[in-house]
Length: 431
Image (cartoon, rainbow, N blue to C red; front, side, top):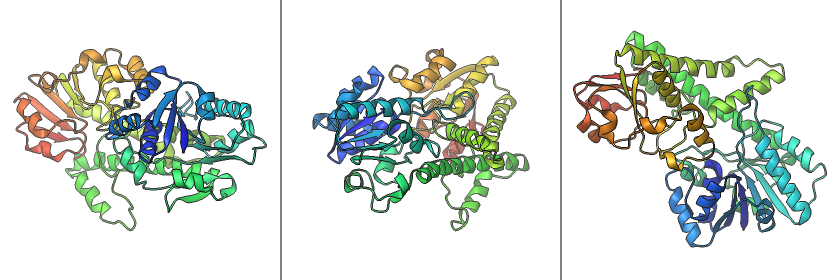
């Protein structure tokens, strides 16, 4: 099948690569010429393990192209997958501007060249969004137009694997109608649950709110345990042995405040909608303030260290990505610079020249001076001393040990047990 994908960020780029591996032809569409140019070369616009090989192979096989022309993309494909961003507004509500723009352009293209078409919405949207979009653009949809909401559960740094082996697969259709074989054959798995639009939209927020709750809970336990001399990692290990009631251990690791492009934004959106409905969600509303408090606790640990030089290992919100959106370490870096600390940063996944879109805006707005702080040589980044803030596992421990001096000390934010073996003072953030 020939498929157009709108939005060539994390979800769109990974979806494109994985679908070409299945033999489908993909036309990527994005408003940013830089992303289109990279795609046309078979080069991913983001850092994601395994994606570069997929796109390069697809380009060699003639299965991949990209354009900024919506009409051409729709006219030459049978299915359109919408993966554009849904950022937060200044009030925390969800901004569907990009989705509405794309849906309007698809509607216009189909009006000019009517034909059977499937639209798959993967952009994260609040319950009621798909129905609202349909009312706006297709109040009386033609019988040969299928529109579904197919939430993504892709984790950055493991997104390719997650696409092929999804932890959860749910698709929403109008009134939970059965999906057509074409959609099932292209995207769905044998155990995909078919629900209505609202339910599929809601499950995405329920999952992300739960993930955010698990991270916050583990971090709060870490803050309580630390002054009592208790290792919160051991507490979480014991808690997670109960796989019947305590569900999943994945996020139960005290350490970094949560960040990235999904959890903060989706928690804000859920809170904003609940307030519109006159509802009170105390736990969900407490997540972002608690996450901020956890960040302040980390800053307090840095102050208490007595060091005036700080080296951050890993600036992105997660290892093996270059995603700086709402990264706690970006906030830490900003604060330390404002307080007069001497700061150096090491993150091998970060290439400033390759940043595009929202990622680039983060740096342009918050850290325009990042280039002068970022060192690609570990020895230069570590220098001769200072507090090493180990935020990500971005370097082999043996290599790290070769550059440390007796004037270094380590503050482990990530739960990296091998750091204890290094011959310098070590402290865990929550253990």
